[in-house]
Length: 519
Image (cartoon, rainbow, N blue to C red; front, top):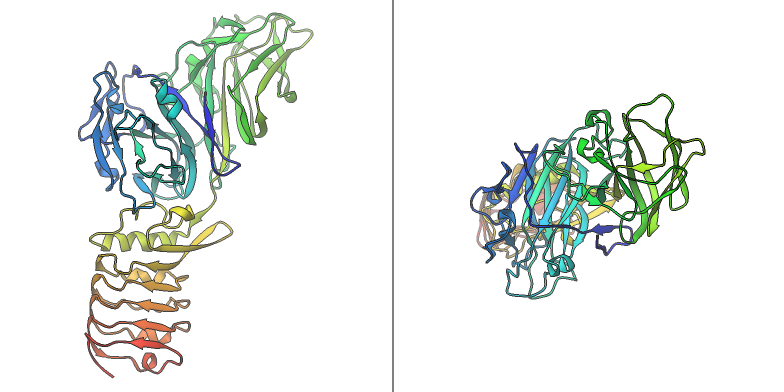
């Protein structure tokens, strides 16, 4: 399972390969399945799984179809983003605030741009840089690639974005093939504080299985990769109920196990590859494969890289889960199961999950986000990247938007759309940007009235010149204590200049030519 380090040292990106196979399914999983770049509904052959077009989720980018007849339908189209003026390209999904979601992004390059090597770029979820997308190795091996994250929804919408980075070649464009936003039950993975953290999938494996396990065997559409090694593979003789387990692993994950003989240790190198030094969530699943017996037991201890993970685990036919919500890992990972001296059967393991813990606490103040979203709706042609978090990540903030961050909260301090060719109106809600220092909208086609600004106590400069504003200059402008520059020339304003504004000490005020004002 290849992986690539992100540009930030504590983050780890995992790339998992998917062959071009379809999964049998009687119905849709609970969530939204989107085929990017498609103009029609995409049905997966031999299943009832279907993906909807992405037009309702994004308003930027170009569609294309790959020239191949043997691809899974969701890999046969993609959306790519040649628009270099945008700082990010975002899909927006409706979610339930406080809900828990597994988000999966899928990529297959297919040489859509005439090149031979996939572009490298970032992906962002909410206001957090999630990972670097580098599908080069998988594509060279004829595989598609996917990335997963489990997050809590902090608002009623969730943005999933891709963005250029310093690793993106100048002549290449970020792209995406499909996005899946899958709803999880509240009880799942609930030892993680999803208000401040997310879980990035490192590995999810069904030990002893030679085939992947997915929907409908896992109703949450999690993908359980097969894992076999030199150890013995056992089949179970008893069944379990998924609902009895925390995180609800699929029953099929317990159908096989890898095991060692009586009195022998079981050692597995898993996950594959070398892990970056940071914190991980680990969950391991076990079930005794034998029929129930009063005089027979399977007891062993579990160690991870030589450190005790769990002592004297008594595995029954009903199954058991052990986990750590926060465990340090670094480099290769070895799991060792050591049998108790009196155990009548050797150790075994059925399945496991490992996630990297991703700090997810920073976000823009909800009030500021609401204002900017309303402003975007009021514009006829907002910048292409005015979707998702306006401030975060800072290098991918909205065009023209500058922010400050104190602790975990970002505030908008500057809005500069000078000569951007923008038309529309300024909403009354602009007065709620209480951290704003500079508002520069000159040289556009704004119309309507200038809204009252009573709460912008930090506003220093206001540039609304060379637009089509009408009505009077708000009296409230003269009461803003920090204001030192106001440019209003070349509009269609009438009435008079407020006395308090005209007489303000140290204020640079320009209201002519182009208006119909009296002093």
